[in-house]
Image (cartoon, rainbow, N blue to C red; front, side, top):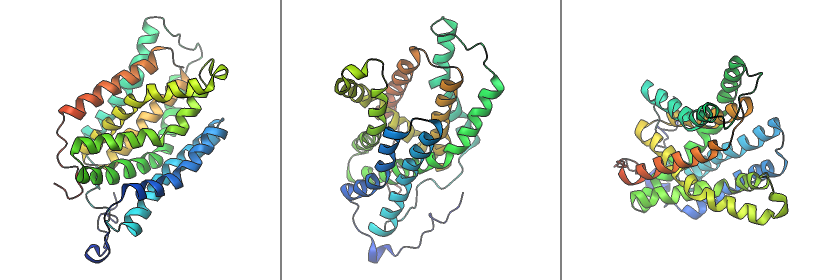
Length: 281
């Protein structure tokens, strides 16, 4: 991976400014929320949905780069500029399959959801690989912003776990337009859309925050933006490939939310989070 950003030659002693969470979020949300809102309103087909959601993700990195390079001038060192280890890549693929593949398998074993008669393993795998590659850059963009840049600065300002929780809440809040879109697609939502939106936001809050903790731990333990990006892409595209190719029954969302909630909570309180501060401590 290029070390250009790692060796950024900003004259920090003369130009570095204290990090401001409000300014950072203003920049990132101002750039990334418009395409996400457009996705929520108009992204109703696979092409427009992919383009708008991916643009929103990429804008997180653009906003972060603007903030780190020209606003705070604090550079991009110690963000995980390494390729990681092969076992890390294997682990994140297994984790993504466990989160989405296991409930699909259980649904079909216990008759909760039937496999399509025309399913093709080759087509399913091909669909996943194409989508996976296309999502690597958007996935990197989110990990670059939320995990590698924002999280260490929050950990400097607050305690480690408080910083983790603030970063997790921000990550959930950033997804609100997409969550509103999902809530309005729920069966029966048209009869009371405000209730559907409220329930979706409330129910998604803790699982989404703990999922952010899980994403953060992948970045922390691998010390690699490459590994974190691969996990982000695998998480999204294992889900989407299975949903398009096989379909989801009632167990998948319950399983996903439960697993990420439990794993994230355990990692939040029991994992060793030392080393995520921006000063490298």
